Structure formats: structure tokens, C-alpha cells
Length: 173
Image 1 (tube, rainbow, N blue to C red):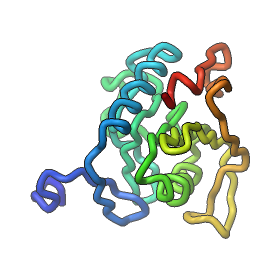
Image 2 (cartoon, rainbow, N blue to C red; image 1 turned 90 degrees about the horizontal axis):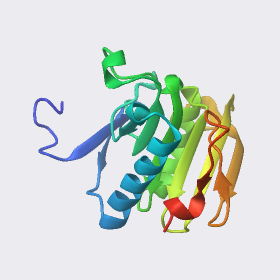
Image 3 (cartoon, rainbow, N blue to C red; image 1 turned 180 degrees about the horizontal axis):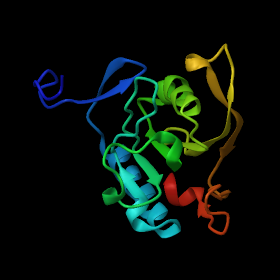
Image 4 (cartoon, rainbow, N blue to C red; image 1 turned 30 degrees about the vertical axis):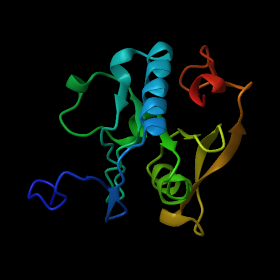
């Protein structure tokens, strides 16, 4: 549909078979996304860090997380990487917080994403979601079992890089 011009230059994602039109990014969202990507490039191989590129969740969804960390370079893939191959998925959230905490969290859990962060600009915190489990009461039938809230002063340690720590204050200025 995008190739046919249906969205007239608007950004959109496919989530659970539904087209979700995204609002334009404000400065706080754009600058935070850039800052998160820069910090993750220091913790992981730079070629693994992707900004706003699709991941195939296999749930009739092609979300475009603000930042994702996927092993290998873009030349390693002949199609969109599978979300379950992502080492880390990050959404920077202000106006989309409710959606990122509900439909997206369930979509990523159902896809087998090991670790999902919501960088919550409004509350200046990072919501860390780990350990996806089946839950018939959740959207898509999945949720994360381990959820923690990290505040400025706390350090984040990505599951895929236990030797690296990232200051929450570096992400939520």
C-alpha cells in the first residue's frame, strides 16, 4: 500500500495486521533516539545498530523500532531481520507510550525478543522488559515476565553485553 502512495509521505507501521500511522517526531523524540543509537554503538558493534528499520515479528507485523540491535551488518540479510534475532529492541516514547506498553510490548514478546526497552521521555525513565512468556490475557497471547523501571542514577546492562553498562541519565536527559 505504501508503494501505491496510500500514505502520501506519512510514516506507518504494520502491527498485528493493522496499519498504524505515526505522527511526526518532535525534537525530544528525535534527539533521544539519536542519543540512544550513539550509546548502543559504543556497547555493540556499530554495524549492528539500526535506526527506525523494520523487524519481522511473524505476527503480521513489521514494526520499525526507534533503535534495534541485530547481529551482523545489513549485507547479512536478504530480507528484514526477524525480531527474535534482535539482541535488543528500543522504542523512544512520549506520545506513543500507551501503544508501546501494550500492543508493541505484546508483539515483541510474541516474536521472542529477549529484551525490549521503552525510553520514556515524559517520566525520564527506561522501562526494561525481559523474558517473554505466554499469557492468554495479553495481546497476541504473550507478555514479558521481567519488567523493571530504571531511573537516572541507575545503570542498564544489556543481556547481550553483560560487560557493558549504560547510564540511564545518558538516555533520558
